[in-house]
Length: 127
Length: 278
Image (spheres, each protein chain N blue to C red):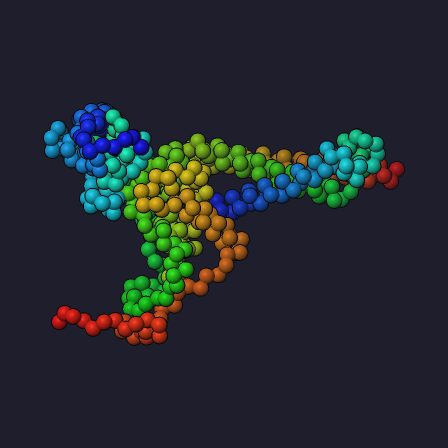
Protein backbone atom coordinates (compact mmCIF):
# COMPACT_ATOMS: atom_id res chain seq x y z
CA UNK A 1 0.00 0.00 0.00
CA UNK A 2 3.02 2.30 0.47
CA UNK A 3 3.47 2.59 -3.26
CA UNK A 4 -0.15 3.74 -3.53
CA UNK A 5 0.54 6.52 -1.05
CA UNK A 6 3.72 7.75 -2.75
CA UNK A 7 2.19 7.45 -6.23
CA UNK A 8 -0.93 9.37 -5.19
CA UNK A 9 1.16 12.21 -3.79
CA UNK A 10 3.37 12.10 -6.88
CA UNK A 11 0.29 12.67 -9.06
CA UNK A 12 -1.07 15.36 -6.71
CA UNK A 13 2.32 17.13 -6.71
CA UNK A 14 2.27 17.03 -10.51
CA UNK A 15 -1.10 18.79 -10.60
CA UNK A 16 0.02 21.45 -8.09
CA UNK A 17 3.23 21.89 -10.08
CA UNK A 18 1.23 22.47 -13.25
CA UNK A 19 -0.82 25.17 -11.49
CA UNK A 20 2.24 26.86 -9.97
CA UNK A 21 4.15 26.78 -13.24
CA UNK A 22 1.13 28.49 -14.82
CA UNK A 23 1.43 31.15 -12.14
CA UNK A 24 5.14 31.43 -12.85
CA UNK A 25 4.39 32.04 -16.54
CA UNK A 26 1.85 34.74 -15.64
CA UNK A 27 4.37 36.49 -13.41
CA UNK A 28 7.57 36.19 -15.38
CA UNK A 29 6.75 35.77 -19.05
CA UNK A 30 3.27 37.07 -19.94
CA UNK A 31 3.38 40.74 -20.94
CA UNK A 32 -0.31 41.21 -20.21
CA UNK A 33 -0.14 40.01 -16.60
CA UNK A 34 3.50 40.48 -15.53
CA UNK A 35 2.90 44.08 -14.41
CA UNK A 36 0.46 42.86 -11.72
CA UNK A 37 3.38 41.34 -9.88
CA UNK A 38 6.14 43.65 -11.11
CA UNK A 39 5.16 47.29 -10.62
CA UNK A 40 8.71 48.67 -11.03
CA UNK A 41 9.58 48.83 -14.72
CA UNK A 42 9.19 46.17 -17.38
CA UNK A 43 11.65 43.58 -16.03
CA UNK A 44 9.83 41.13 -13.73
CA UNK A 45 13.14 39.74 -12.44
CA UNK A 46 14.74 43.07 -11.57
CA UNK A 47 15.92 43.49 -7.95
CA UNK A 48 13.12 45.91 -7.07
CA UNK A 49 10.41 43.68 -8.49
CA UNK A 50 11.91 40.61 -6.82
CA UNK A 51 11.97 42.41 -3.47
CA UNK A 52 8.39 43.53 -4.07
CA UNK A 53 7.27 39.90 -4.41
CA UNK A 54 9.60 38.59 -1.70
CA UNK A 55 7.97 40.98 0.75
CA UNK A 56 4.55 39.42 0.20
CA UNK A 57 3.74 36.43 2.40
CA UNK A 58 1.72 34.87 -0.46
CA UNK A 59 4.82 34.62 -2.61
CA UNK A 60 7.02 33.29 0.19
CA UNK A 61 4.51 30.54 0.88
CA UNK A 62 4.14 29.86 -2.85
CA UNK A 63 7.92 29.61 -3.33
CA UNK A 64 8.19 27.10 -0.50
CA UNK A 65 5.22 25.13 -1.83
CA UNK A 66 6.66 25.13 -5.35
CA UNK A 67 10.02 23.98 -4.02
CA UNK A 68 8.41 21.20 -2.00
CA UNK A 69 6.23 19.79 -4.76
CA UNK A 70 8.94 20.17 -7.41
CA UNK A 71 11.47 18.34 -5.24
CA UNK A 72 9.04 15.58 -4.32
CA UNK A 73 7.76 15.13 -7.87
CA UNK A 74 11.23 15.23 -9.38
CA UNK A 75 13.03 13.06 -6.86
CA UNK A 76 10.25 10.47 -6.67
CA UNK A 77 10.23 10.37 -10.47
CA UNK A 78 14.01 9.91 -10.46
CA UNK A 79 13.68 7.15 -7.88
CA UNK A 80 11.09 5.38 -10.05
CA UNK A 81 13.38 5.61 -13.08
CA UNK A 82 16.32 4.26 -11.08
CA UNK A 83 14.19 1.41 -9.76
CA UNK A 84 13.51 0.43 -13.37
CA UNK A 85 17.04 -0.92 -13.34
CA UNK A 86 15.79 -3.73 -11.04
CA UNK A 87 18.43 -3.13 -8.43
CA UNK A 88 19.01 -5.22 -5.33
CA UNK A 89 16.67 -4.30 -2.44
CA UNK A 90 19.55 -3.01 -0.29
CA UNK A 91 20.68 -0.71 -3.11
CA UNK A 92 17.10 0.49 -3.61
CA UNK A 93 16.89 1.36 0.09
CA UNK A 94 20.17 3.26 -0.15
CA UNK A 95 18.86 5.25 -3.12
CA UNK A 96 15.67 6.06 -1.20
CA UNK A 97 17.64 7.30 1.81
CA UNK A 98 20.05 9.35 -0.33
CA UNK A 99 17.22 10.99 -2.28
CA UNK A 100 15.33 11.67 0.95
CA UNK A 101 18.37 13.35 2.52
CA UNK A 102 19.12 15.35 -0.65
CA UNK A 103 15.45 16.37 -0.94
CA UNK A 104 15.13 17.44 2.68
CA UNK A 105 18.48 19.28 2.50
CA UNK A 106 17.49 21.21 -0.62
CA UNK A 107 14.06 21.92 0.81
CA UNK A 108 15.58 23.26 4.03
CA UNK A 109 18.05 25.42 2.10
CA UNK A 110 15.36 26.76 -0.24
CA UNK A 111 12.95 27.45 2.61
CA UNK A 112 15.64 29.32 4.50
CA UNK A 113 16.39 31.38 1.37
CA UNK A 114 12.70 32.22 0.81
CA UNK A 115 12.18 33.19 4.47
CA UNK A 116 15.41 35.20 4.55
CA UNK A 117 14.44 37.03 1.34
CA UNK A 118 11.06 37.79 2.88
CA UNK A 119 12.78 39.27 5.95
CA UNK A 120 15.21 41.31 3.83
CA UNK A 121 12.38 42.65 1.68
CA UNK A 122 10.35 43.67 4.72
CA UNK A 123 13.40 45.29 6.35
CA UNK A 124 14.08 47.18 3.11
CA UNK A 125 10.46 48.34 2.90
CA UNK A 126 10.70 49.70 6.46
CA UNK A 127 13.88 51.57 5.49
CA UNK B 1 -3.30 -12.32 -43.97
CA UNK B 2 -1.56 -14.37 -46.72
CA UNK B 3 -3.78 -15.91 -49.41
CA UNK B 4 -5.36 -19.20 -48.43
CA UNK B 5 -5.95 -22.08 -50.82
CA UNK B 6 -7.21 -25.60 -50.32
CA UNK B 7 -4.01 -27.19 -51.64
CA UNK B 8 -1.48 -28.28 -49.06
CA UNK B 9 1.66 -26.22 -49.12
CA UNK B 10 4.91 -26.64 -47.29
CA UNK B 11 5.50 -24.31 -44.40
CA UNK B 12 8.86 -24.40 -42.67
CA UNK B 13 8.45 -24.61 -38.90
CA UNK B 14 11.39 -23.18 -36.97
CA UNK B 15 10.86 -24.80 -33.61
CA UNK B 16 12.81 -24.05 -30.44
CA UNK B 17 14.32 -27.22 -29.02
CA UNK B 18 15.85 -27.47 -25.59
CA UNK B 19 16.53 -30.28 -23.19
CA UNK B 20 18.08 -28.81 -20.03
CA UNK B 21 19.71 -32.14 -19.24
CA UNK B 22 21.66 -32.35 -22.49
CA UNK B 23 21.64 -28.93 -24.19
CA UNK B 24 23.60 -25.90 -23.10
CA UNK B 25 21.12 -23.48 -24.62
CA UNK B 26 17.92 -23.52 -26.69
CA UNK B 27 18.41 -23.90 -30.45
CA UNK B 28 16.17 -23.86 -33.52
CA UNK B 29 15.30 -26.92 -35.55
CA UNK B 30 13.41 -26.72 -38.85
CA UNK B 31 10.67 -29.01 -40.09
CA UNK B 32 8.78 -28.89 -43.39
CA UNK B 33 5.08 -29.32 -42.68
CA UNK B 34 2.39 -29.69 -45.38
CA UNK B 35 -0.31 -27.25 -44.37
CA UNK B 36 -3.91 -27.08 -45.52
CA UNK B 37 -6.44 -24.33 -44.98
CA UNK B 38 -7.77 -24.29 -41.43
CA UNK B 39 -4.85 -26.24 -39.99
CA UNK B 40 -3.80 -24.95 -36.59
CA UNK B 41 -0.30 -24.67 -35.18
CA UNK B 42 -1.21 -27.42 -32.74
CA UNK B 43 -2.05 -29.72 -35.65
CA UNK B 44 1.25 -28.77 -37.26
CA UNK B 45 3.10 -29.77 -34.11
CA UNK B 46 1.20 -33.05 -34.05
CA UNK B 47 2.27 -33.64 -37.66
CA UNK B 48 5.90 -33.13 -36.64
CA UNK B 49 5.54 -35.43 -33.64
CA UNK B 50 3.81 -38.18 -35.67
CA UNK B 51 5.92 -38.01 -38.82
CA UNK B 52 9.16 -36.12 -38.37
CA UNK B 53 10.41 -36.01 -34.79
CA UNK B 54 8.77 -37.89 -31.94
CA UNK B 55 10.99 -36.23 -29.33
CA UNK B 56 9.34 -32.81 -29.64
CA UNK B 57 7.63 -31.78 -26.40
CA UNK B 58 4.86 -29.25 -25.83
CA UNK B 59 1.88 -28.88 -23.53
CA UNK B 60 -1.74 -29.05 -24.66
CA UNK B 61 -5.07 -30.44 -23.58
CA UNK B 62 -8.46 -29.24 -24.81
CA UNK B 63 -7.58 -28.25 -28.41
CA UNK B 64 -10.29 -25.57 -28.40
CA UNK B 65 -8.96 -22.49 -26.62
CA UNK B 66 -10.38 -23.26 -23.21
CA UNK B 67 -7.71 -24.89 -21.07
CA UNK B 68 -4.91 -22.40 -21.79
CA UNK B 69 -2.22 -25.10 -21.92
CA UNK B 70 -0.77 -24.48 -25.38
CA UNK B 71 0.36 -20.87 -25.04
CA UNK B 72 3.38 -20.36 -27.31
CA UNK B 73 5.37 -17.66 -29.04
CA UNK B 74 4.19 -17.84 -32.65
CA UNK B 75 6.05 -15.72 -35.19
CA UNK B 76 7.02 -13.38 -32.37
CA UNK B 77 3.58 -13.05 -30.79
CA UNK B 78 2.18 -14.98 -27.84
CA UNK B 79 -0.90 -17.02 -28.67
CA UNK B 80 -2.61 -20.37 -28.29
CA UNK B 81 -1.36 -23.03 -30.70
CA UNK B 82 -4.82 -24.59 -30.87
CA UNK B 83 -6.49 -21.27 -31.60
CA UNK B 84 -4.13 -20.03 -34.30
CA UNK B 85 -4.39 -21.13 -37.90
CA UNK B 86 -0.99 -21.50 -39.53
CA UNK B 87 -1.94 -19.75 -42.77
CA UNK B 88 -3.30 -16.78 -40.85
CA UNK B 89 0.15 -15.93 -39.53
CA UNK B 90 2.64 -17.61 -41.86
CA UNK B 91 3.39 -17.42 -45.57
CA UNK B 92 6.38 -19.73 -45.82
CA UNK B 93 8.00 -19.74 -42.39
CA UNK B 94 6.63 -20.12 -38.90
CA UNK B 95 8.67 -19.64 -35.76
CA UNK B 96 7.40 -21.58 -32.77
CA UNK B 97 9.04 -20.86 -29.42
CA UNK B 98 8.09 -21.30 -25.77
CA UNK B 99 6.47 -18.33 -24.02
CA UNK B 100 9.07 -15.73 -23.04
CA UNK B 101 9.43 -14.49 -19.44
CA UNK B 102 9.33 -18.09 -18.19
CA UNK B 103 11.97 -20.75 -17.69
CA UNK B 104 11.85 -23.60 -20.19
CA UNK B 105 11.14 -27.08 -18.89
CA UNK B 106 11.70 -28.62 -22.28
CA UNK B 107 11.28 -27.56 -25.94
CA UNK B 108 7.99 -25.61 -26.02
CA UNK B 109 6.98 -26.26 -22.42
CA UNK B 110 7.32 -23.16 -20.21
CA UNK B 111 7.60 -23.42 -16.46
CA UNK B 112 4.50 -21.52 -15.28
CA UNK B 113 4.97 -21.95 -11.53
CA UNK B 114 6.13 -18.34 -11.04
CA UNK B 115 2.86 -17.14 -12.56
CA UNK B 116 0.71 -19.45 -10.47
CA UNK B 117 2.65 -18.57 -7.31
CA UNK B 118 1.90 -14.89 -7.88
CA UNK B 119 -1.68 -15.73 -8.77
CA UNK B 120 -2.11 -17.65 -5.53
CA UNK B 121 -0.59 -14.80 -3.52
CA UNK B 122 -3.38 -12.35 -4.42
CA UNK B 123 -6.00 -14.78 -3.04
CA UNK B 124 -7.99 -15.33 -6.21
CA UNK B 125 -11.20 -16.44 -4.56
CA UNK B 126 -14.15 -14.93 -2.73
CA UNK B 127 -13.14 -13.68 0.70
CA UNK B 128 -15.80 -12.94 3.31
CA UNK B 129 -15.35 -11.28 6.68
CA UNK B 130 -17.41 -14.04 8.22
CA UNK B 131 -15.20 -17.06 7.68
CA UNK B 132 -17.99 -19.46 8.61
CA UNK B 133 -19.81 -18.28 5.50
CA UNK B 134 -16.91 -19.43 3.33
CA UNK B 135 -16.59 -22.77 5.03
CA UNK B 136 -20.31 -23.46 5.04
CA UNK B 137 -21.84 -21.54 2.13
CA UNK B 138 -25.41 -22.71 2.61
CA UNK B 139 -27.38 -20.05 0.78
CA UNK B 140 -27.42 -17.74 -2.21
CA UNK B 141 -26.17 -14.22 -2.71
CA UNK B 142 -28.02 -11.74 -4.84
CA UNK B 143 -25.99 -10.06 -7.57
CA UNK B 144 -27.56 -7.85 -10.23
CA UNK B 145 -26.63 -8.20 -13.92
CA UNK B 146 -24.93 -4.78 -13.71
CA UNK B 147 -22.81 -5.93 -10.79
CA UNK B 148 -21.89 -9.05 -12.70
CA UNK B 149 -20.99 -6.98 -15.75
CA UNK B 150 -18.43 -4.98 -13.76
CA UNK B 151 -16.07 -7.96 -13.57
CA UNK B 152 -17.44 -10.52 -16.03
CA UNK B 153 -14.85 -10.07 -18.78
CA UNK B 154 -12.04 -10.67 -16.31
CA UNK B 155 -13.48 -14.08 -15.47
CA UNK B 156 -12.74 -15.22 -19.04
CA UNK B 157 -9.02 -15.48 -18.22
CA UNK B 158 -7.78 -19.04 -18.84
CA UNK B 159 -4.35 -18.52 -17.23
CA UNK B 160 -2.50 -19.37 -20.44
CA UNK B 161 0.33 -16.96 -19.63
CA UNK B 162 0.20 -15.10 -22.98
CA UNK B 163 -0.22 -11.73 -21.25
CA UNK B 164 2.69 -12.50 -18.93
CA UNK B 165 4.84 -13.39 -21.94
CA UNK B 166 3.88 -10.18 -23.73
CA UNK B 167 4.51 -7.89 -20.75
CA UNK B 168 7.67 -5.76 -21.25
CA UNK B 169 7.77 -4.83 -17.56
CA UNK B 170 7.82 -8.46 -16.50
CA UNK B 171 10.60 -9.06 -19.01
CA UNK B 172 12.81 -6.65 -17.09
CA UNK B 173 11.60 -7.28 -13.54
CA UNK B 174 10.68 -10.80 -12.51
CA UNK B 175 9.43 -9.51 -9.14
CA UNK B 176 6.51 -7.68 -10.80
CA UNK B 177 3.25 -9.54 -10.21
CA UNK B 178 2.27 -9.26 -13.85
CA UNK B 179 -1.01 -8.77 -15.70
CA UNK B 180 -2.66 -12.12 -15.02
CA UNK B 181 -2.53 -12.11 -11.19
CA UNK B 182 -3.40 -8.40 -11.06
CA UNK B 183 -6.37 -8.92 -13.37
CA UNK B 184 -7.51 -11.73 -11.09
CA UNK B 185 -7.22 -9.33 -8.14
CA UNK B 186 -9.44 -6.82 -9.95
CA UNK B 187 -11.88 -9.58 -10.85
CA UNK B 188 -12.41 -10.48 -7.18
CA UNK B 189 -12.19 -6.91 -5.87
CA UNK B 190 -15.04 -5.91 -8.17
CA UNK B 191 -17.18 -8.90 -7.21
CA UNK B 192 -19.89 -7.71 -4.82
CA UNK B 193 -19.80 -11.04 -3.01
CA UNK B 194 -16.18 -10.43 -2.05
CA UNK B 195 -14.97 -8.57 1.04
CA UNK B 196 -11.22 -9.07 0.65
CA UNK B 197 -10.24 -5.98 -1.34
CA UNK B 198 -8.28 -4.31 1.45
CA UNK B 199 -6.43 -7.56 2.12
CA UNK B 200 -5.42 -7.72 -1.56
CA UNK B 201 -4.55 -3.99 -1.59
CA UNK B 202 -1.69 -4.78 0.78
CA UNK B 203 -0.09 -6.76 -2.06
CA UNK B 204 -1.30 -5.06 -5.22
CA UNK B 205 -0.28 -1.61 -3.89
CA UNK B 206 3.36 -2.52 -3.25
CA UNK B 207 6.37 -1.67 -5.40
CA UNK B 208 6.00 -4.98 -7.27
CA UNK B 209 2.28 -4.51 -7.69
CA UNK B 210 0.08 -2.58 -10.05
CA UNK B 211 2.11 0.66 -9.98
CA UNK B 212 4.99 -1.19 -11.66
CA UNK B 213 2.83 -1.40 -14.81
CA UNK B 214 3.86 1.02 -17.56
CA UNK B 215 0.64 0.58 -19.48
CA UNK B 216 2.29 -0.75 -22.62
CA UNK B 217 -0.99 -2.56 -23.27
CA UNK B 218 0.68 -5.60 -24.84
CA UNK B 219 -1.15 -7.88 -22.40
CA UNK B 220 -4.51 -6.84 -23.84
CA UNK B 221 -3.30 -7.34 -27.40
CA UNK B 222 -1.94 -10.78 -26.59
CA UNK B 223 -4.93 -12.19 -24.72
CA UNK B 224 -6.52 -14.95 -26.83
CA UNK B 225 -9.79 -14.67 -24.88
CA UNK B 226 -10.33 -10.95 -25.41
CA UNK B 227 -9.75 -10.06 -21.77
CA UNK B 228 -8.39 -6.54 -21.26
CA UNK B 229 -5.82 -6.84 -18.44
CA UNK B 230 -4.52 -3.29 -19.08
CA UNK B 231 -7.98 -1.97 -18.23
CA UNK B 232 -8.16 -4.17 -15.15
CA UNK B 233 -4.87 -2.71 -13.94
CA UNK B 234 -6.06 0.86 -14.45
CA UNK B 235 -9.25 0.08 -12.53
CA UNK B 236 -7.13 -1.47 -9.80
CA UNK B 237 -4.92 1.63 -9.60
CA UNK B 238 -7.94 3.92 -9.39
CA UNK B 239 -9.46 1.87 -6.62
CA UNK B 240 -6.18 1.78 -4.67
CA UNK B 241 -5.87 5.56 -4.82
CA UNK B 242 -9.50 6.10 -3.87
CA UNK B 243 -9.11 3.65 -0.99
CA UNK B 244 -6.01 5.51 0.21
CA UNK B 245 -7.81 8.86 0.04
CA UNK B 246 -10.94 7.36 1.63
CA UNK B 247 -12.92 8.56 -1.36
CA UNK B 248 -14.09 5.20 -2.63
CA UNK B 249 -17.81 4.92 -3.14
CA UNK B 250 -19.19 2.37 -0.75
CA UNK B 251 -20.38 -0.69 -2.62
CA UNK B 252 -23.15 -2.55 -0.89
CA UNK B 253 -21.89 -6.05 -0.51
CA UNK B 254 -24.16 -9.00 -1.26
CA UNK B 255 -26.35 -10.25 1.49
CA UNK B 256 -27.17 -13.89 1.81
CA UNK B 257 -30.73 -14.19 0.56
CA UNK B 258 -31.81 -17.58 1.76
CA UNK B 259 -30.78 -21.16 2.32
CA UNK B 260 -31.21 -23.96 -0.22
CA UNK B 261 -34.85 -24.53 -1.24
CA UNK B 262 -36.10 -21.52 0.69
CA UNK B 263 -36.07 -19.05 -2.19
CA UNK B 264 -39.21 -17.45 -3.59
CA UNK B 265 -39.78 -17.12 -7.31
CA UNK B 266 -40.00 -13.58 -8.61
CA UNK B 267 -43.46 -12.95 -10.11
CA UNK B 268 -42.22 -12.48 -13.69
CA UNK B 269 -40.26 -15.71 -13.81
CA UNK B 270 -42.15 -18.73 -15.12
CA UNK B 271 -42.13 -21.92 -13.13
CA UNK B 272 -39.72 -24.60 -14.25
CA UNK B 273 -41.26 -27.40 -16.35
CA UNK B 274 -41.93 -30.70 -14.69
CA UNK B 275 -39.14 -33.24 -14.73
CA UNK B 276 -39.24 -35.82 -17.52
CA UNK B 277 -36.93 -38.35 -15.93
CA UNK B 278 -37.46 -40.35 -12.78
